[in-house]
Image 1 (tube, rainbow, N blue to C red):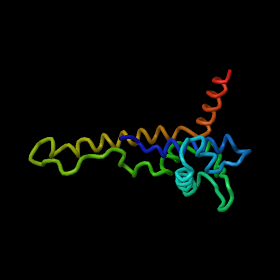
Image 2: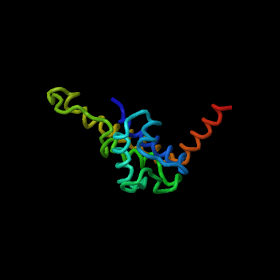
Image 3: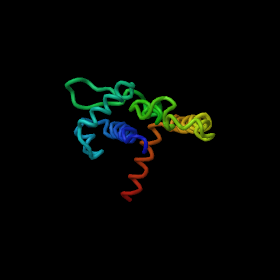
Image 4: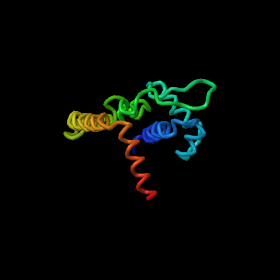
Length: 146
């Protein structure tokens, strides 16, 4: 299993809205870039809107960022698209055999490790802004076209 692709699609949507800020970032336009259908894009855009990351107006095509690039972190996007619930990135199997020393102790042993790993990942995501992502995309694209 992996983290839902909604996370990377959410980042894709936000970066493209920024890079296309002089154009109309409709769900059809965004879907073409992501190479998916507009319905999925609208669903993710709804999540991004609810989290206060984008602004959309009913009946009007397009979206714009609701905050500055430097104020949107990857953690904001991660949480906005409901990738995982709080402290549930790693699942621990339920009902191990309590007659076994491993079964009796496995959950209490690995839960703190899993929680620390999730916190470390979220800390890293909180340090990376959309501004950095957009800058990296622009830099990579300009190097690729040279």
